[in-house]
Amino acid sequence: MPQTLRLLLVEDSQDDADLLLLMLKRGGYEVIHTRVSEPAEMQSALDSGSWDLVIADYSLPQFSGIAALDLVKAKGLDMPFIIVSGHIGEDDAVAAMRRGAHDYVMKHNLSRLLPAIDRELRDAADRAARRSAEQRLREQEVRLSAILSNIPGVIFQLQRDASGRLSFSYVSEGSEELLGLSPSLLISNADHLLRLIAAEDLPAFHDCIAGAGTAAPAVPWEGRIQLGDGAWRWISLRFSPTLVEGAQVRGEGVITSIHEIKLAEQELRESRARLSELTSHLERVKEHERARIAREIHDDLGGNLTAIKIDLMWLAGRLESRETEKAESEKRGGDSQGDEKQKSMTAKIRQIDGLVDETIRTTSRIARDLRPGVLDLGLGAAIEWLAREFENRMNIPCRIAMTPSDPEINADIAAAVFSIFREALTNISKHAAAHAVDVEIQVTPLKILLRISDDGRGIAPADLHKPGSFGLRGMVERAGQLGGTLEVKGDKDCGTMLTLLVPLSAETGSTVTPDIAGAA
Image (cartoon, rainbow, N blue to C red; front, side):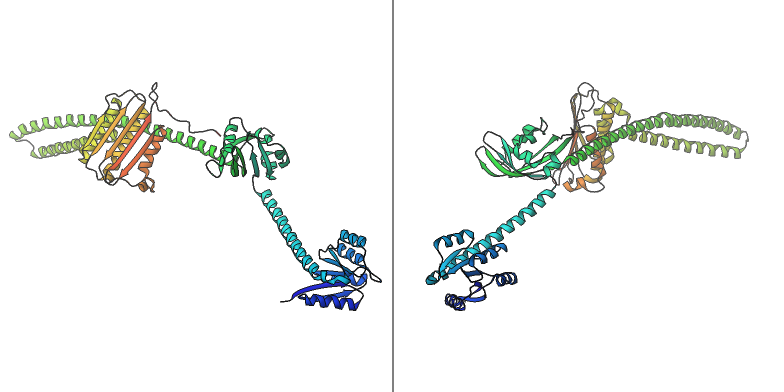
């Protein structure tokens, strides 16, 4: 297929123009052309269309090839410009080439014209492609720069040489806002960043950069920096090496602010600590209140019921005496109707006495449930008592392995451990369908270890977190308040095992509470 060529021809001779067009047609070009011979025509042609090639005679009566070249350059056009002349000196040709002409051909040697046109068209296409690529690259650079400028944080390229010295080759504009340092300042000397980092966090920063490329593709680091106003801020850095040679590291990374996250974490830790402290206080208040109510039920209500029973017994005795007297009176012909009333009153008193006995047993049971008095004899004794109660009530054997040592421990701790044990037995009775229960308890000056195992249906991991599972969650929470742990393991073939471990202080017998507030 012929190649279309849009040609602007600067020529005053129609015969020479026809000859050039014929050569181009024979060379495989389908030419669309305009011939001009004056500056105004040339200017109009340049304004009215786009051209692939300009062929200009060097000398015209009212125009020249050099003048035509100047018009093309003034328009900022990059197209092949070839001078064809019948008489041009070597000096003039060289001057024209320096001025911007791409080639010149003598009219008596037009065989050079087609190869020159082919070459210059290829070169022009290459230049256009290069300009287009450069334009796209510039546009991409502008877009990338805009993106990097709007990303919260700092994008950087970093090098670490064999001696361990750091240098930045690129730093985004975000460094001014995040670090208070301009990109040019950091690029000139990376030590400006190192001076901001807290002394205790600096070794980990160097380890992060030094270890890049040896393990994970992206190495994280978190630390604190001190800004110019003296304020401390938390930042996070992720560094991804693209080149690692020996001790040399080169790569890209990002620095972001995590100060608000750290503040939120600190606030959450403090809130959890306060909540745990409040919960622990409420548990202590609840235990104390249970103990108080148990004492009042036992002492006041129990005492009153006992006094009522004594009075009833006294009244019953008096009535029985009167019955005896009435019986003797009957033998002498006494009042039989009065005797019947007296017997009815005696039966009623005995019925009330039975109700009082039942009420005394109920109040004793409630008092024991609130806080068994056996806790005053020690945690081991209380657990053994509760195990026997469970065994008798549920008809499930409950075997106990206990260390002989039972040192004095804080009453609140004993009550909390006892409460966890009671809740565990309640869960076994409700859900386990067990045939036997094994209990191991070790109480030493340094710890309390309580392990409860059953041979029931076990517990699935999902059951530990299902909604409404307040019993297990309550036990875990109470263990945490004691500074200890509660581990639950379940298997459908092996039942369930609960292991409670509470560390103690050897001096006071109180729990050793870890630092849960943390540092920010």
